Image 1 (cartoon, rainbow, N blue to C red):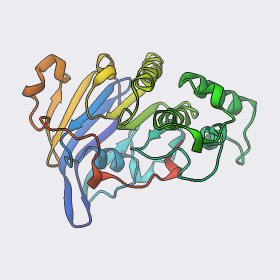
Image 2: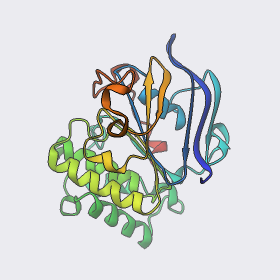
Image 3: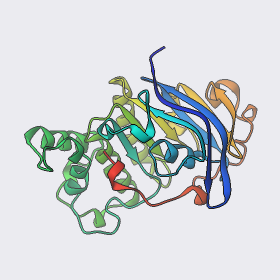
Length: 255
């Protein structure tokens, strides 16, 4: 098995004074596609946000590509798609401008070169938004916003892709496009960590399912189809939005 890309050991985290993660262990190896599942408020979104540094760790260790997160600097290797947000946060911008922001970590002195512009075009093509490149993101549907966010994460050509509820509130056509996009990335060897409400069209791509309940790992193994949906403790009543875990995105980690 390849070296770990993500490693959480005994991680505890709090939101305010409320314990959310209660000493979880999670390892994602290179090339794996791992789904985080669990009921509303189980800690799924908080777990991925500890990985990228949006939530401080009260105890335990987090490593990315073998480096303690506190010392990790190579964020261009990480693509992050946040949970349910608009592509430009209400700021007027074109689709291309938003996706280009995901390429800045690879740009020299903040200036995009020919290769950068090509990567942006490829990312837009992957998510089926090339024909909307010049449009304002404010004119897009919810599913199209999600495609733009994914294109922004893909523009940096990341080795690790972290996606928080990428299918939530997305129409069926966009779900199929996003599933195809992810399939292509997995074929290239990209490591993927997904927070999901349900596996849906992504199910064939999932190598492992990790189920959280009350901030603890209660299952780490075959996805639900293989073990039976009702055999997964804590996954009986899953809500697509973890309001307690939601937080604004940090644009510095969108590369």
